Image (cartoon, rainbow, N blue to C red):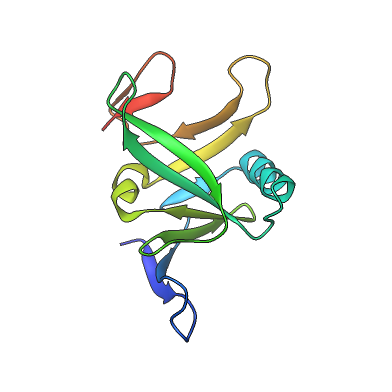
Length: 130
C-alpha cells in the first residue's frame, strides 16, 4: 500500500498510525498555506487535517474535512505542503491519488478535491461517486 512505519510513542500511550506519502493525497501550496493558517488560528499549529469520505450528497459520497490535534488509531499520516494530513483506511480507498487545492475567490472558492477515482460528480461539486 502507500503506508510505511507505525507511529506512536515507545510507551504505547498514543494510538498507532501508519506513515504514507503524497501518492495517497497531496496538497497544493495554496491549500497548505490555508490549512496552516487555520491550524494556527485554532491554537494547534502541530495539528492535522483529517480528510474523510462519508456517504451522502447528490452523488452518493462526499468529502469531510476537519482539523484535529493528532492522528488517531489506524490513520495514515501524510506530510504535504508543510501540513500533516490524516486519512482513515476506508477513506484511503477513495482518495488515493487525490490533490487538495484551495481557491481564494468570491464565487466558487474554498477547498477543491481533484480525485482521479471519482467516476462522476454532482453539478455543485460537493459530492461524487466512485
